[in-house]
Image (cartoon, helix red, strand yellow):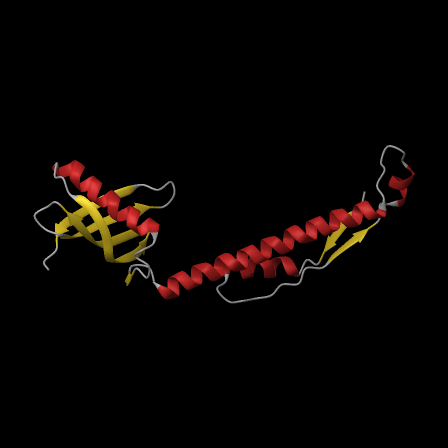
Length: 174
């Protein structure tokens, strides 16, 4: 059988790179060696050098993909924590996003089911979000058919599988 040899020094670097916030590069050295002499002569085992090289390249590719994926995840987590920070309220940049509008529509429907009012959803005018173990939202919602036209809804969306909870739905002065 063909064997794969890796540089043992690169594995701790890869593990450390996945855990550390610093950007590190790791070197992966792979070498495909042909089957051992006894295996070549055994008719039951038919492995050629090209098959061993292919196998080594697949393993090398898998290692490279794993390392690059870990780096991308680290980078994404770092940008989220630097940009928003856990616990900080930040403005929602695109309130016209269909997901944000859907959250607003859901908040109005949930409020109607809890209070037996008949508010009609208009649109989400603005809002803030807070990163927690999920996401908190404060949405400014325009409605039709109620005592007030503007409401502020506070809701929580859990991590997948997504579950929504309406925490508050108050008329907004203005």
